Length: 451
Image (cartoon, rainbow, N blue to C red; front, side, top):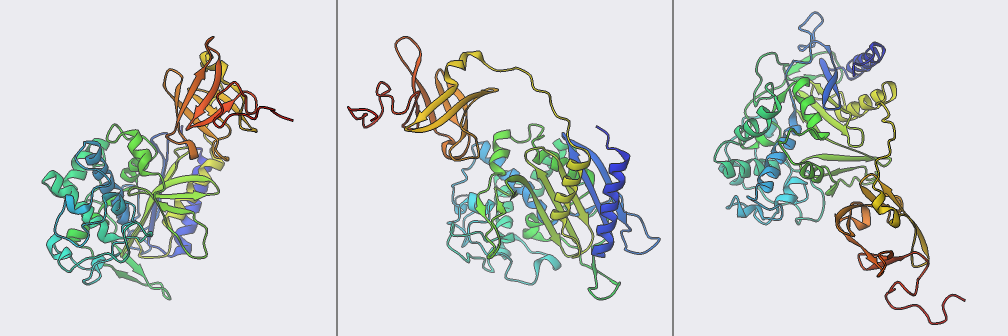
């Protein structure tokens, strides 16, 4: 669909107002829907001066920590190829460090307790050395692995080294060959190329600018090295929304955007977590995924609504002034309000063979309603109590997809005449009447029955 001109004007006004409020030289953004870039715009000049070179959607900005999502996908591709397990200890693949006991999953989800930054000078503003120099500093754990969330740039340097050793080439060569090229992301690079924005700091109390340094971060590059454009990062937003172009299995992507480690901020509700390389947000029950990025001179945001697939990307060439992930969420919200996705009409597409399973069941005295919704059998309301969808796993066999019953087996037990007697769900009995004595209720039913 094409975006309505009035919606485009409203979105442009949002960018312009945010650029002025935040006092940033330039700000570029894009919106993705149904796997395609729906809208892209930019405001300001790349040098921050009136009459300077205007920013545009093909201007390169540094994406900072969004780089981590690419490294994470490269790691999960190794897992899917059978070359590692997420429960493997890091030392099984990269020996000789003090991080050896941390698992790969813990590194991906910032749950390994690994130190946040390097031991040397501020790595984001100084040229980086090699892996041996980094780990010889030495790097270490601040907390017991698995105890708590502790964001770690060093941990993703370690994962980049793992990817490099597994493939025998530099981590970025793997990302370029296996991810960027298949997805057509030709403007995503490790250093600025072509039209690019300089990294700038804006004085907090005066309208003056200071250029920020740009360099090769060496072993720390997997934590935040990549540069990109609105067009390229929008393709990655479409990837995050599920359009992986067979670069990654759908089930693996779903695993990556599940919350694995909660980011606990004292005094704040738990709305943010980390999956496997991706940040995950849960705001009033609505899930979104992506990542934020910041480097001296740059801010970036990627956020995708996991229910609708609508996503936004934001790129800024300033060290501070704008909250890019929050702005991305705001843009997605504006799109949903002003140009909602078309509502698909309902069509009958059910399976009549499961009609003998729908209707009222009882878990003890608790009433549960079973419905056939598309290819799923649904008990209760998913998201409420123990409500869950179930997918067929064989004749009279189902497996739970949600909440308490996720991954648990459901078996339909039938009478001699073929009619369903009861449901056996993870050892619980669901019967047509409360505690039906003819349905093999564990523990039996009192001889005197209800009275």
